[in-house]
Length: 316
Image (cartoon, rainbow, N blue to C red):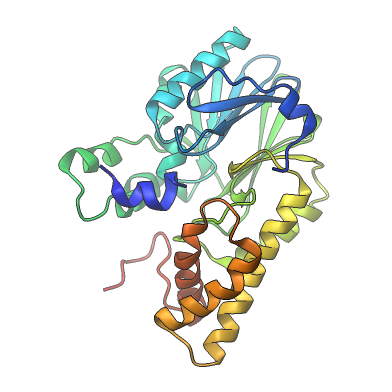
């Protein structure tokens, strides 16, 4: 079993009224919601899929966003797509390299999709995901990581993908992993945010640079190039600009609290305990609140300049 991954990622509302009204509870792994004509969110049910995903039906094909942690969930999503359209599957967009968002890549690729991702994530799919295996990893676990399919098409900052007359705009914003993508569907007012947004959920910060992340969230909210009022987060329920602002506030307060306690001379468990006492008052009811202690550790390392980021050597 991949114990570290389960605890750090796969354990890892404000609902949109229209979205909730269109919910389809049939799949066992996710709740399928039509957010706008031809634009669907697949939100994880109790960790059974491992993360959120979705798909966009255009005039001449289908684009999928993320492929879940469990291959069975990916197969179920593919079946739901085929129920709704006979158009070919053309693209799969990975919002970042983490295993809970890329494990089903081969399933969609076999169905005809070309896999797209920010160019830095290509090498990280197989190399960086190894760190989630934990000390009890088996040879089969390691082989599973080596068999993950990286993107076949990479881009730097912006990429337009056309599905006939319908466009999907991909943009890379730094913060969660250094390889993050958001997917906008401009005509529908929908953004697939990946793990740059956790809707009323405590995030995984193992690869994060919070200083960049908060700047990215500000720029995303003010982006003149797109307009959206519905957001599909990487984890949590379908959201709006309200949840985006709340999440940015959490990251800002986390950084501020940890910096203040470091200035007071606290470190280690004492710093973590003091930070949790402050943060739990406001955020203790959020999903995955067990990750808050590791958030404090990661934030302390970032502020101290000792945090290891993807693509850099492991610290000894």
